[in-house]
Image 1 (cartoon, helix red, strand yellow):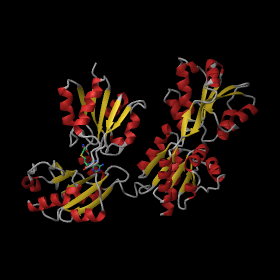
Image 2 (cartoon, protein in one colour; image 1 turned 30 degrees about the vertical axis):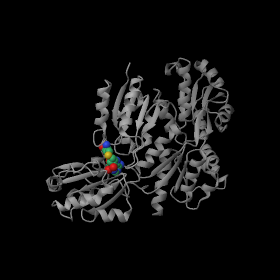
Image 3 (cartoon, helix red, strand yellow; image 1 turned 30 degrees about the horizontal axis):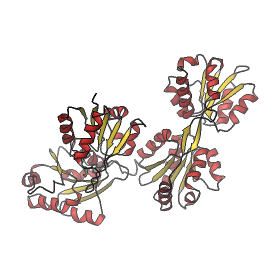
Length: 512
Ligand code: SAH
């Protein structure tokens, strides 16, 4: 049976501007065919085992010609696969989605279009420019700045466009700017009309150059701006002064900073997202990967077999919760099997993970620390309490020791092991160079093991770079860093992701 093709708009850049429907399609994909303007972070929503085909497409450097891309969609669908063709912006706005659709139809293959947020509108928004505004612009046009070079005469009706539409938005026009602006002026648009060039809009490396039609070409040349960029012309550009929000310092205190986030892949995203919301560029390094414990779940399986016996189940990490329930599922069990056992979580994130399995934690201490959790539990344990602690294989023994000291029978069941992720040499050097050059200026540590693993990954030298800010989630992580003779600049007072981000924010504000 033939498969199905979804032509999905990936949105303009910021990966969270993908639609919910687009994300659902990705989740079902066997094959994802994507190009240069797609933020690779959107690929996380496809199954890890899917086939990913990059078809490139820098302005003059087509990695795969369009007819081959269209044919690829046909071929994969004929193999019975569910194919997602993920394209920057909207598939039907200069996205050649129509051509792909036609070939699919010709071959009798079903397809659906999932519209995306087009860069034509969203990129100006992020630059503080509304494409229409009652007082000054009641129409806008989206125009290719890069007509097919094999065409003899221009298809564009410059005489009508230049003065007939209030806001003009050119895509793919950067290298053609001298020609475009000259046509506009020759056809009656005043040379002093406000204009702007926006590069990598909606991303944290967005750049905005405000100019006029007459000076745009020279200004772009001087600034050395390269594609991808949008050229927007019209009175609406003036509103940027008042409506700019994305790169405003007050709202986005981390703008201009690049943060290295070292954490297990699955968990890095919340920290990254919070940092990005504050304007930072984030580079995620998977310092840790999650692996099965070295006893291959023997202890955890034994615990699950007698899960009824426990008075308390104690979780000290999101991973612990997730791996525990994954194992329960292997046993054909779900939340109901936990019966009357009470449940403790070390902090809010862990409690949140439990909530996703329908469990409201009975105990969450105010402070995210094993010691605090032990103290809070001590008061609540029945005599001869049986406690199950599902946690990382390698962890401090404080918690089980303290609980045993007050008479509890504690079963420690490793639910996962953390392993240092591997980084190939080229990737290692690239990150090291970025740190040494000051391009990465902040590094975060969210646990003692991220300290150890990052040092294993990168070596100690890059971390000794002067001016590199080292931010730790709490005092234990900070001490671990000191054990390598690296002095933390920031240690959060509240040992959570939010606490870490707030500490970073106030540090930077004090410096400014
Ligand atoms: N289908 C896409 C457009 C594809 S044409 C859409 O709807 O957005 C590619 C052009 O889009 C680029 O040359 C550039 O002009 C523009 N573009 C796409 N994403 C952009 C971004 N994040 N910042 C600036 N321009 C962008």
